[in-house]
Image 1 (cartoon, rainbow, N blue to C red):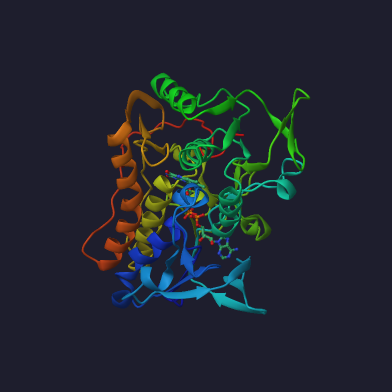
Image 2 (cartoon, protein in one colour):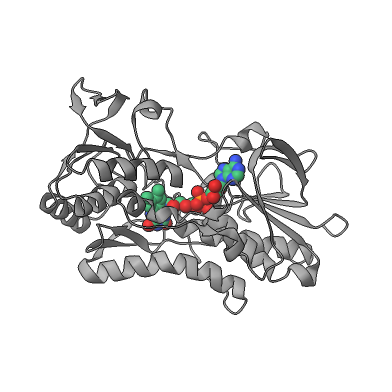
Length: 401
Ligand SMILES: Cc1cc2nc3c(=O)[nH]c(=O)nc-3n(C[C@H](O)[C@H](O)[C@H](O)COP(=O)(O)OP(=O)(O)OC[C@H]3O[C@@H](n4cnc5c(N)ncnc54)[C@H](O)[C@@H]3O)c2cc1C
């Protein structure tokens, strides 16, 4: 990389992209590198709090100017429309103009959004937490109709967190959660029993082992031919990454995540790093990742470390990572912390109630603290890195319909 112009371009200012930017920023002057962060929005969305926003709480976007203050990172607001790997250039749409931006190294951190197209009628007839603005639409409807029937399609963590948050805020809202599998079957027995109790207490009806095959204006059609009516439907289904990597000819998996090697570089284009929801490790890496903020931030930090190593001509390192658990909010007064092995297998140990709330809130705040502290330069973000890692197959925890 020594003879090339050292321009590092980071696509996407979510948890992974901002972490990469602030981590690189420390060394930007010393190593004479230019860092550009590109995002369609002017502020970072705390996606892990979008269910709170939908339930009426004030969740602000954090302006990038604030997240990047006192750094040399340049922020460019615009929508990335194409990557041209052969020219090492990206194309950004800003207002009505298209701008080209060259890179020496690219960090692909474009995250994911809710898949609105795989099931008929979802795009036309449902609300989602796919973005800040999409969430505001649901927030408005719920506030205007607090006694209506909300149907939540999806029994993953987004579905669970949304159902409990909304039930707490709107006690007269009738809520039904429908999911294709056994409810919360990827959690421990203890956790499942606890969730059943909480849902019962909050009068949330669970309809599991019921696959939604079509969404109409006021009802969903299930695979067995029956229908469930609703006033509003929240689609908490599968998450999907942007199509840009596939369109650019990068090696991707079946849903379009960029496939990266153990060092987090694209297996087809070594000058491109893939981090967060829009990337997946090649199977031989033997690290299980699910789309999560918990893995996005470590990936962003590790990609930054490896880019710095490349600039300094030192050895780049393999990514190591392990989960510790899943932190699930159940409204503001309860939470469930499911402890887990590093490969995400649930342990039979859970934390609930007020202590659970404290842990969950601490973790949510820690994400933003980490970004601010990393930027300040006196804190280096770290994460659990087990030596031995076993590959397991798993589901996307936020998105089981
Ligand atoms: C309600 C909810 C609760 C959650 N709770 C948790 C939790 O408790 N713990 C956990 O670990 N995970 C949780 N998650 C999952 C977590 O939010 C995601 O895994 C995480 O946000 C991924 O981070 P990221 O940086 O990869 O992408 P994102 O945070 O999605 O950021 C991607 C960025 O890219 C930008 N972008 C995308 N496309 C373009 C484009 N073409 N041009 C320009 N910019 C673009 C977007 O504007 C966005 O800023 C939750 C998700 C939801 C929806």
